[in-house]
Image (cartoon, rainbow, N blue to C red; front, top):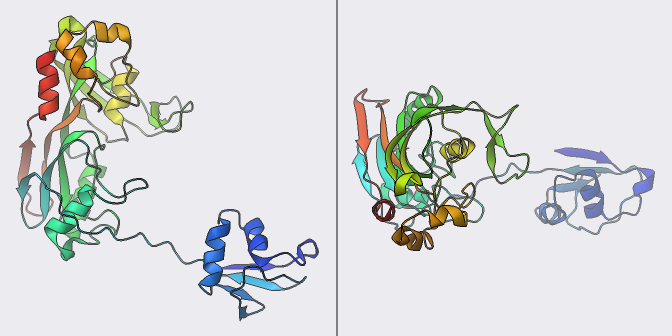
Length: 316
């Protein structure tokens, strides 16, 4: 509820303009919609006229309802289910599938598929817009995810992630060969000061992030390598940022990768050809392990690399 009084300099101003000037966080179109919805009172009387001209001393009251997330709809999208019980699901997510609705991707997401598969009882678990989701992997990263089917399990899984009691490893194909071939990358991750769309290792602020890496196979005479990355923490784009930070960005990464002509020329001809159409970061969530928050059973899962990653490794 906003309570405002019209000043001398604001007399004869339209009420929608008055509100826009006084409440800059609300757009003019949003304010006009609220006026139509009878959220505006002038001297205690409901007013639905956006061009109402104000008088000095009038009391203007505006109620702004809390935003309600739109409820995702069920959509029949195929799911690869690795494991399921009454409390949770383990999904092998394909590259290209967004985890939950967001600007630019309001449907066609994993959440839409889960609502269709699990039914109406699944809606609202842990939140309206992201039911069941306790962690996510990027749209163009493939591999394993755990999804909660009940509120109790959701709370338990959130606790496991917050205390870092989840074992996760990823396979990544990176440029070059790290030296040493195994190690620890530790550096706080926050918004890049140079590009707000990117994350970066930042000298101050950010959130603590730790990644352990190990080279599994050297490819293309050292121009590329297959790396295992284990997460101690789970920050946005963590592996992509940390491997770039130590000079070994992921192949195909559109945001952090460095696909120079000199790097491409070092690859076999078949790999050079394949890279022309390889449009996602070469990253796969390979393993996932944790103690089941309800049954207390120790669970451990592993998934094969997706076909596009296998083909890329073969060409290298």
